[in-house]
Length: 262
Ligand SMILES: Nc1ncnc2c1ncn2[C@@H]1O[C@H](COP(=O)(O)OP(=O)(O)OP(=O)(O)O)[C@@H](O)[C@H]1O
Image (cartoon, rainbow, N blue to C red; front, side):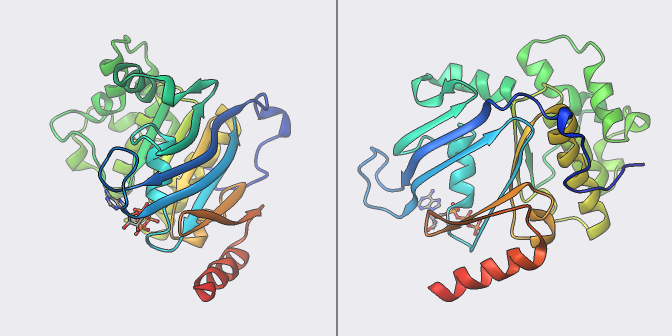
């Protein structure tokens, strides 16, 4: 059903203009008393990165290295203590809560490990949910998104009647439906068998290659990270390394090096 090819599957001309979809500049996050002067853990410490449209970035690192905090700050779910985050040309720090909510709804897609579909809604209604929340009429986009993940024929089913992998594909369709600039995926394959995981990763890869989405994947799994164009490694909240055109063996070596450094 899907062509399970990794990098290099798309013609170079399929990649959109090189303007960055996501930019982090010197982002830091200190947990603590909540006023930005907390003395809690330094979860992020001066992280800078750029993800152009059509690029797939994986973020790795040991438990507690700051991956989830990075994703939360980058996606506008949390406010950094220092530094700036831009989605396209929009600096998140300049946005109030309502504008930030709109930006998350309209310009960002999320896929999480936990299969957070709404059980009382059909598969189609789940895929259409971001449009509904945005007050945008579904002009067939939700069904098209479901078709793109191979589930158009299950549109009227309840999520409970789908397998875990099929539900995660619905979550990917839902993340794609607003045609977001950036898709953030936090361990989206952790609960899936290897074959199903590959299907979901292929969908994310295709969203980057064929639709020009920027994809940011947080994962512990070298086999998942090797679908990315680049892997960024965090260690104690800092960027500790990067690998372009990654392969699982190189990723494992880097993870060992980071482990041994402590
Ligand atoms: N809400 C919070 N309050 C205080 N400290 C926090 C909070 N969230 C995370 N931390 C701390 O910030 C650091 C980074 O945590 P984070 O969850 O970003 O790491 P992670 O790399 O995603 O870990 P894992 O792989 O285990 O999910 C850790 O030291 C963690 O204990």
